[in-house]
Figure (cartoon, rainbow, N blue to C red):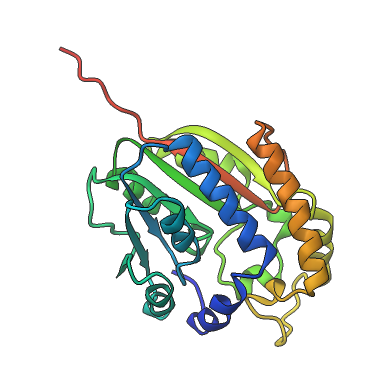
Length: 254
């Protein structure tokens, strides 16, 4: 399980104002309303500082929520951010639930786990039949750079790899689209310039420190992408991929 826990403090300060976290939250909330409108409970694995689950708690009052993370250091900030939500330290390679949750979210955490297929199997086990899994991951191996290494990523996904692993775990894919498409040229240039560099000034959240003017411009670009996704457009390439999948309801034959 890869992540450097010393980054949680600054991450908690950056998330509220950063364009990527803000629009990703809007995308997640839209997906929850569209694909799981009647959910009664929601479990987020790898919740970090609680930024996503905080937004969900505001958007879905009365929803039973649970957040988990491998690192207690992140949960300290999550509990401060959303005191009303339950949080547990947990290794997601061994989730202690079976057929219990209406929906489970894994937002930019699968890439930190070498045994991602085991995690997908554990999510499948923990979901109720008909339950929905929501996933975001970094995409495109050609974007790999020292940023990924310092962030303790095990991989950047290809669409075929992610779909194959999700299907192998038993899920039926409902929606899959790229995200961060309009910013891909800038992202590629940044990654290319730092390719294979071991610059000590680079850290796992360096890309999230951005000038306020650029932050607003980039947020407007991603809001346009969100509009397209909401309209049913599936973007072919992008720095991230968003996937929604369900655990089928198995009908017993007489």
